Image (cartoon, rainbow, N blue to C red; front, side):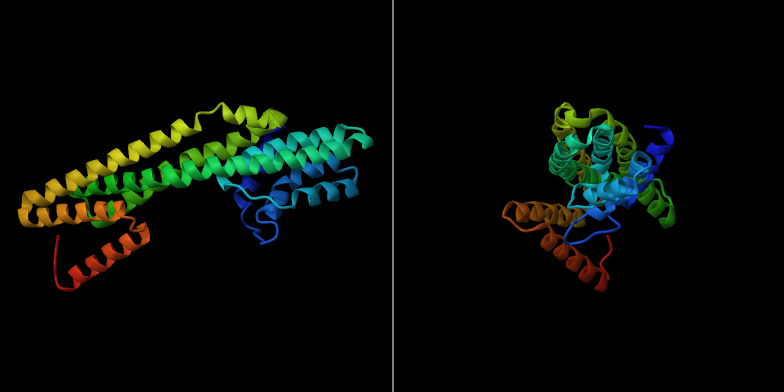
Length: 262
């Protein structure tokens, strides 16, 4: 795979969710991503190009940041299909569909647990820590907002962009060894590390906030500590996150209305 082709596939992978449908989910987007490769491989035979493109517009659904791995694998297998004899192609096409379906499920499970369940919460807490640090340094509000939002965007998207770019090349090299190669990466350790780091950072932010409040007004510090303990207790007894966030918002709004200032 040339660098130019890899770049085109990488750019198109950002649009895999632009053509959602209830029937095919990300299938049309996946076909769009595969377009340049299929035209290059099957350009001399337009009917074969259309058949291959229709094959990749079928049902597909995975974690979008992980889709580059599936795209690279599909490119390698399509290359094998186009180079094979006519009588061998049906079996190779069935194998491609099967591997693509299995890869979608595995990548969705890994990507959701890491990016949605671990990395996004960590980056959110990190943005909070950055905001607290800039406030402590006496920065104006707009600087605090830019620093927190910019830190979140930068840290969150760094592994996303790396994975999107490297995923195309890795999937192309792995081909039908996809499952074995994917299993060698310590995904679970990465998830646990991100969750542990986020928990520790959140605890640190809570302690710093309580210390700051208690230093200025012990009564307010005690109230904040009680509210924090009540929140943890509510979660332990099964209160959903949405209801907890709604309660915090309502209490905060009521406090602002009556003139309460932290």
